[in-house]
Length: 181
Image 1 (cartoon, one colour):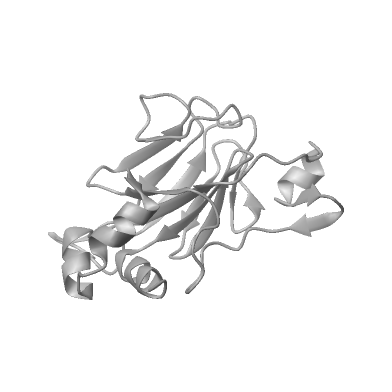
Image 2 (cartoon, rainbow, N blue to C red):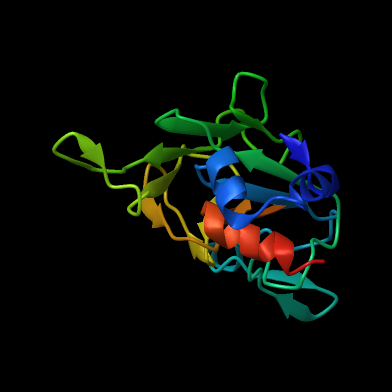
């Protein structure tokens, strides 16, 4: 995992083709938001809406020209078929917070083979919640336990109560990082 600012500086001088060659798999940018007071209500949690001081917030993901507001981390996927997320060290992505379950969720590579060639333009990933205590959301939709949902390029993901992430394919991540210059 990289610190967001260090990653941004590291890739600043790369062209798109150099970036995609160096980081050919998806990239997850994860931001930990500060703890806020919120109601723990099943209906509220299922719509991924958090009430704070009477206003309603909905995470839209990181967009062009809009850097993370808080300290962020960058996780570059590797050649594994499964990428686990959880609070303990045995996960690929470790998020140290009590709102994240020990084994919270995992990404599953669903890319298909056509003959002997992987369809490079069809990098397909699903996200599965592993029965986490505080839930997992994709684009505002609550994932039920063991439910698998396809993760699209630019999808916003909420893990537990405080971790907000955006799933990028390499080209889109490069464009996002370039928009922050």
